[in-house]
Image (cartoon, rainbow, N blue to C red; front, side, top):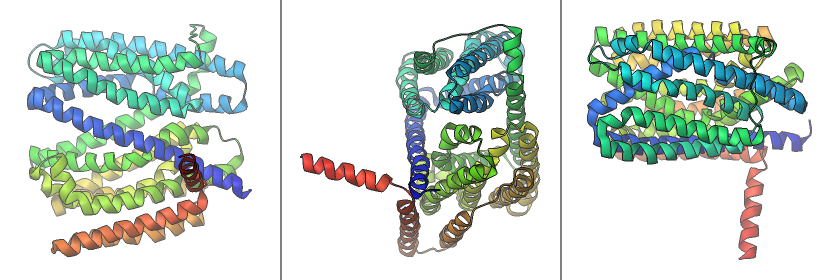
Length: 498
């Protein structure tokens, strides 16, 4: 393979990982600002109401959308890469038809089940009318998911990034004034407005490129059954994951206290959210490219290994700085009451290294339409993490949860490699192994540094470790991509013009 092609391919992965990582980072930042403002206006009770409505609506949406937002990407990507515009329009019409059906079913189910949802979610008061009013949100989420799949499958990456930015800004500008003027009474209208804004932004871009066409023909709907089967497996895997987290939190609450559950949730979510700034490009850019790959196992191995290389090199320095900076970051974002979970978070960071290594591999069954392999592998991980957390918590409390999550991540990585090797012929490249051996020692040293009590030694050595890890990643990425030369050329050109 020519070197220029290699450079362009690495540059593509780095470029869009950077773009969507930046968008994700901005989303997190705006989300923090929004949550702070809403918390100040509504207080804990209001935030609790929003959380309950959101979690219930999301559960209903995930249960009725058939996973089309993920499975449809595979179908569109394959057709898009073939260049057959007629077939592309046909499959887009099919996806929109299925999205409309799931939207109507989701809305109807929300209305019919509203009395039960009110009773199960709250157990007090009558929120039946609220859930009836929120039923359009379920429908709008289904429509939005289908249109997002179309944009992902047709590689409209710039549009997707733009939509994401507009969404988070719109959520801030619409919800905060509503809460300020009407308080808790604005919760349901705010959720409706945010869902409507997201849908209008998405369909605005999508319909402009692919005008709206839907059909109720049985033949057209039957063509989408393979897509639906893959989507159902994705939904079931999500339900298993949610079930695993529910069991873990329930066990912690039963054997310890609600405060322990809060500490665990905050630590786990903060670590996962931080790492997701790099992983966010997987679903948007990497999965469509992998789904469209028809070049055999050699090409597939190359695509997956390059994604692993770039993701691992980008996330490694971030995780070193995260480990070192937690004593400041956690109280800043939450409060000093959450410091007991720092130890768990610092060891959970190791799981994020292995997540960077395994996540691109985990997309292989989905990209190949192998729904049951995907479900099987996800189920194994969910069982492992539940059992390990229960055993480790009994021995080491919250620190044990971090050990368990990391151990489950390592075991899942090994199982995934073995399974995909025998099933699809996948193997890790020598470069991935080399980069792992170069970066993991920085992670170990950063963790060992957390036991040092001298602030001067801790911060000096910690910053030096982070800079060293960054230097290694930058050096390797500069050799593999043309982005550095492009940026330098633009900068030089700008100076010469001035």
